[in-house]
Length: 632
Figure: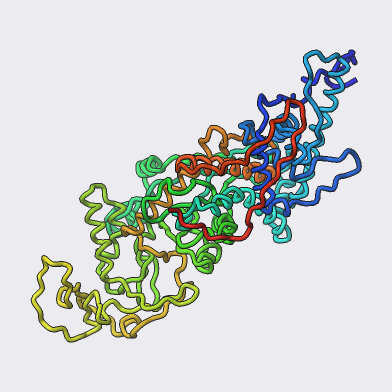
């Protein structure tokens, strides 16, 4: 007697009542594809990071590497990254030679049309046993990679879920979490490294852009009324959208909520009419229960290089929304950086660049990467000062730079017409004359800077730096002829300070790389070089996210393709999807560029149907970083 058969009626297994019922694919995977995937995974280094696959007493399970490759092949066939589709692909869509390569038992599980009842029952038992072996291996692998293993099919209480969440964030389990992330990173970079060493990225300069994107989960959010946690314990509420831009005065100050002019009027409570106006001004925020995926994509900060290299994903870190965006961004680019692929420019949006200096900016300094940043509205202009120099838009300028030039960033943001924007950009370009000159670059990002009014190539004349200037006739219609008399002049204010800062008295000043590292960047904000780098890198980033979400076959935006619960399972399955997406992107690039694959060797006599084929041989790939050859 069973729950589904309470009256214990005689019944017969047909093989169609299995849960899930096997649906044999209509085609068989080419051995060349299986060989390619096997070689990429084997040389990626991910298999060495997997735990040992020794099983408990009982029937032997499928090796972990076989299950992982089965998930990739299932996703490649356009099915999904679910474990039930993986076992169907392994047992129904591979040739005997490919099964031997992947250590899959060569068992015929197809039910012939003329099978008797006993034969159907026997084959159904074999199908059930084989599927359980794959499921048991997947469960064992995810459990051993989990720093806080628990029953993922049961909704815990909020208190129990908090204990599990603390284990994920504990320092004692950091190595386990980093090992899981490294397995996912190795899988993602496997096809990219093979393409990189073939020379497909010869025109890519090593610039990279990172961004957070929501990843939906197949589960509900926590129920705080019934004290039930979600099955995805480390997921959270992802906020899409955000607050609107704060109204600001042209001078850069935030607009007050009450504009009364009488004494004490500014301290009065806000009226109901003003409250309603402020409420309408806010942009709607949409919260969804999801994971956050920090993804890194190759980009170009300069030049029109769209389509000159494959649009792939270089790294992915799955984490809780709103937690540690800076460290997650560093971990997303670290494997590609260690392989010698990432260099020079690093671009991130304002949500990531707001991280603390020791979590992101100082680390980028040690890696030798130059950040391309944007700032909030209240930080687009003056961001600090060091020994008299003022940091404006990420660059150090003269302390006596005129106020209209200092507030040019706010003027540009608040401009509404093309004429106003052009005027603001002209003011931003005029800052260049007041920029302190870099005399020497030191280690760890140190810079030796000089006053712009010093030296034979001075860009301004200042009353604090009196120098004899010969009187000459200046032709203002010839801007290329710059004489000392044609330079901008720093006027003496009516109330001058008694003591001048160091930049106005010394010959040069050494600025350590750690000073104001959160705001400094290679190109000053809103300058032409910054706009070119920012627009190029951000467009490649958004395009990469769109490709991963809108693809008809390899989409991370459909939770039905990733049904297993838990952060371990979701990390591995997202890596599998991105692995296949990178493989397809590289193949499309080579096809569009007219790069023909190498001709295979002359095949022998094709085996007859039913004859076993020899297992394909995998070709070893170089592991270390290599400089791609220049494309002719």
